[in-house]
Image (cartoon, rainbow, N blue to C red; front, side, top):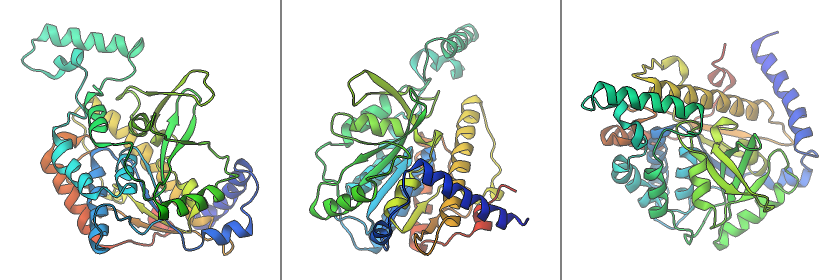
Length: 377
């Protein structure tokens, strides 16, 4: 059997699985309602989210939009750094998004190691101090330590720049992983403007019988925690602790990339046209080096995210039918970006990646094909 035939057959089988998991098949009226609707989907990728921000700014400039004027989409979906970017896009705060990436994030200490373990990489700390810190870290990872990164930087950024009162112009969906329940968990920040409310209402109707994963509202009380959770890489960051809706306690949440790098399943229920922004080039162009264990861990997570997302886009392609069409479009760098997953503190790399994204945004979207996406052979 040819590989393309096998993939198509596998996709058809997956449709049956998804249909069972998500309840009854979408009714004809629902299929008609989603025709022509467009979703913007942002992947994870650490500091390479600067590329996404640049690409979005290009779309904003091409449409001659100002802050407070939404892009021409019916929803925004994102995970990890794509979730953080997605919030500012849904609230049409484009100038702030650019300012964050080029001016704020380089100095925010996003990946600063917790204070007790800073000595490990400090050549001036002395060998004994460094060994003691390394031993403490090893003990902590076995018993009690849930993350090695100081969360002060990202938490401070969220408090200062994410205002619960900001108008939401486009329905926004962020993917997380409920670690306590070991399942994917999507959160929705509901639209609040007149046009956004119309889009939200239709989304709600199309997702009414959607049970593949529970969608929970990211209300003001938990908004900061949700945006932190979507980007909380396991082991690197402490999980977010969010109260359960039934009042029985809390659950721990981590990066949505563990289960679904972007909520494509939700997007394809609500929209026919999927515009996906990727931060990775085609895999055959990569030649990554890792200077240390932290970089290896981040590289492993990035690889996992990429594979999950590849399958998601592939599934959207091969399961499209005339009755329930899906049209994916992709924007991605042609070559490895001039910055790495962990380069949050590198202002030059962030600016360079932002510029690559802007240029690619001007170039526009590409229609993916199965051979172009399936690089797993």
